[in-house]
Image 1 (cartoon, rainbow, N blue to C red):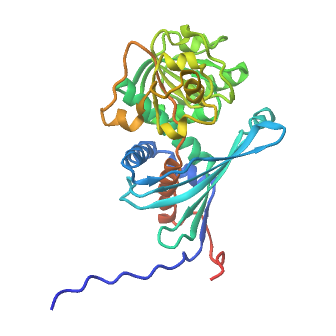
Image 2: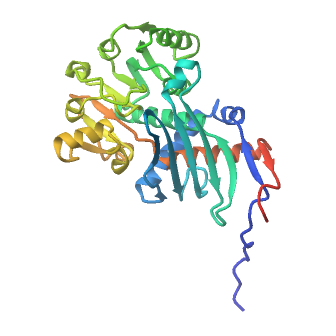
Image 3: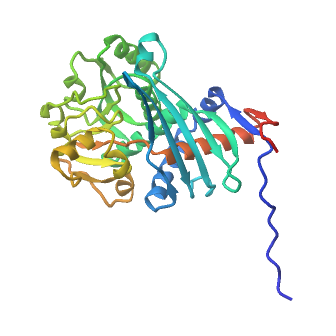
Length: 349
């Protein structure tokens, strides 16, 4: 008689909803940034292979308040670096630039993770840290792949807020060899604060605060652009005359002319060339997308190499698959340690 396949338990709703706050999220990420980088790398490769569903983000905007928005990023990832656990969920992230003037971050976010078999949500996570972490991990992955090593003679920062600070922590924890830093922010006080943080807890290198944005680009191998700009403000070709790798994390800073003169890499062309990003404006000017040379997955796999004679701009739109990959990893690590708070009577079953 032939053997019967093993019986599998019937799907059932989760026993409760685990709520994971910022302290638990931070505890998992601190000291594990190399692991986070690998989660992001594998998520990018899985997405490139079609093992994902990543609808366009939905933007909730408000009449008479053009700077404020809330964004929904749903996603499904079929194969992750943590053993292939399917991930699905949504990040709901608010961006209110005016918050900064009141002394607290512009972005706040929550993430909901859903069970693959039943669709029931099983976790809610504070997601602003997850969002900033996956953005920084994506950026630093792009930097090391485009530069070919974890090394830069000079690193410039344009914008010295939360995202730049997360990039700093990845550079620190991944032991980058950096010769010097140059910092520019439209609020010099922010740049000086960031300078102090870098000096006390960053890759060991001299730090200079510059009074003009050109000082962050001059002679730099790597430039991190992370501002709250909604329209292009960087248009001088001299800024990229030294052919740096630019991590364009705020997406809307560069005039189309600079984009069209660079090697352009993104995470997903359909996602990135929209919503009036610099890539989108360049498409409108050029009438095509041929100036987008490829994706970060192409770079990781060696299918795309930068032209060392011109700037390489990596402009990741920020895919939801990265959020659910990092969020799922954080959840599993926290749950394995009994962390978070489980609401046992959340579901009506």
